[in-house]
Length: 373
Image (tube, rainbow, N blue to C red; front, side):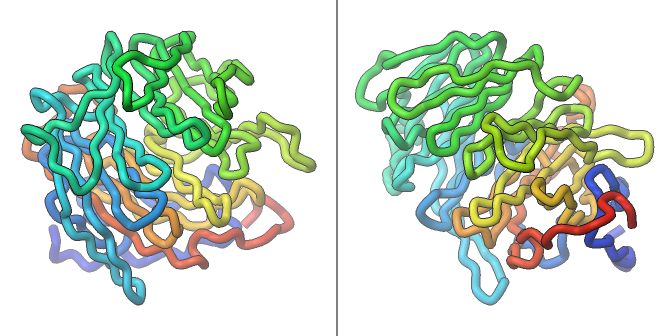
């Protein structure tokens, strides 16, 4: 009940090794990861599938299984955050929207979803009937979308096993690449794009100019890939699986760095999906969120967990840092991890913003005796 005193905070040792867990998921957990996290108004009526910040401002958008694409402006002052609803558009026929991306100038939002369409919304303009303009189409639902800064193209990954590249001014794709399987997630940083598909395939591309395949490999994890994120320095990527594990993989040789994997998002004998991996552009550290309702901050270079938050009372379906890195948005929302049978219509879906001071997310420096407390 809401009258219960908050559980005593356990001090997590700063050297909490990768793979240790301290928080416990309970049905009566708190609503938000930290007490002062801001509850974003008007978060939508169904599952939240993506949260994406503008690269140039503190505007952010969510996509939702109710067909809505919603935009807010977040404001932060002395660690206090609030978000103001700005606008909403909807995919045709209220089809679930699964992914979002911003153009590099922050003026345009691209979305994709179960209507098999890739759509474009110029912020500040209300499109006819509130439906954003279709700029691309797949033969199956579209799971992921991103913007390629070097060519001003939009890339979409579909369950039709294709990557397609779109110029918003023409109806046909300017290029397409066949994937080994259905696209489950993709991420772009600079000239690096990494795609995780069904069948545990991972394909990396160089997207400077004409996109070309750079590497194709089997996931370092033994279970289905759920999310993928490029390192900010483009030397590699992190992949998260449904079995509470993250793989850190270097594409380029980096002095003193080896690829490795670690366990996370596990509670006692239960294993949860890693639903999102989000890198902090300033420090190169990252967050993971999972089906256990936990937010973790990690430092891959020093193999440390920087911070583990107490589990909230619902899965965390997606998350992202703003461009400045001082605000972390996450969605408290059913992640479909137990199928449609566990879906309870009317369950709240919330978005929270956590103010992130530097000391929570910056590397703590090298420790000796890694793994010992």
